[in-house]
Structure formats: structure tokens, C-alpha cells
Length: 133
Image (cartoon, rainbow, N blue to C red; front, side, top):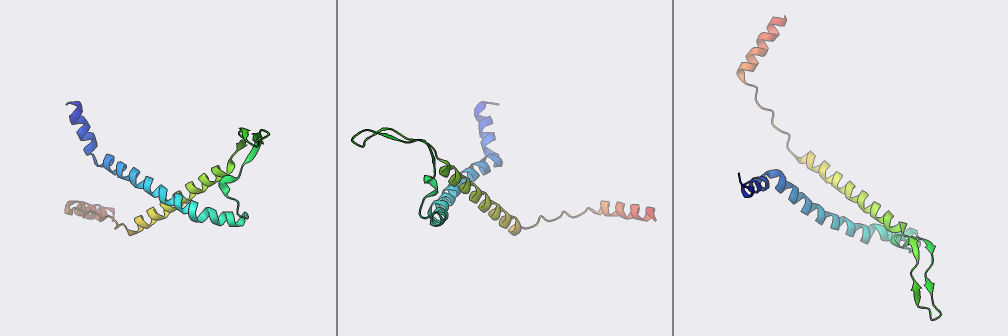
């Protein structure tokens, strides 16, 4: 079997195609949730922090150095923990929305039909039950 035919067989499997679709939809969905966080959630949090953006929260280790003209000579050294907090909020919201969508999907999905029991199995069960008596 040649490499090209093996590759065709690999790609034609349903799992690979399903995974590719899932990755593309997941990336688009991530953008939607990030927009929700940036446009709605974080401004609401900013209202509680008197207008300060969470992404601007930082701990300055070494302030920026300016020359006599006020031009920045060396950039400040800071730990930007606000950006980390926003990323955590993004992740938690994405996980929550995915959980809710999957929960709704599983609820709407029709239960699998139980296969009919063959007659010979039913007959064997009747014989077993009558022997137990």
C-alpha cells in the first residue's frame, strides 16, 4: 500500500474530518467569547474598579527611566497580572458556555433505540426462568 493511498484512507476516516470541523468551530467560538469578555464582562468589572481596566493592572518592579527631556530611556519592568486574570476569565467563560451547549445538545439528542431481542434469546430466557422455579 502506497503512502498516498494510506494518507487518503487516513483522511477519509470520519474522526479526522470531525476533529478538523471541531477545531475550526472552536476557534471561531473562542473569538465570540473573547468578544463577550472584552466588550461586556470586563467593562462591567471596570465599573466596579472605578474605570480601571483589568488588563492594566500590574505590579511595577522598576519604573520607566526618563531623560531630562521627558523621553523614555528604559521601559518599566512590571508584572502584568491583570492580563493573566482576564485570560483566566476568558477560559472559564468558554468552558462554561461549551458545557452548557453540550448539556443542551445531549438533552435534545434522541435516545438510542434499544435493539430488539432475538426470539431465540427470549426463548432461552423463558427456559432459564422456568428452570429456576
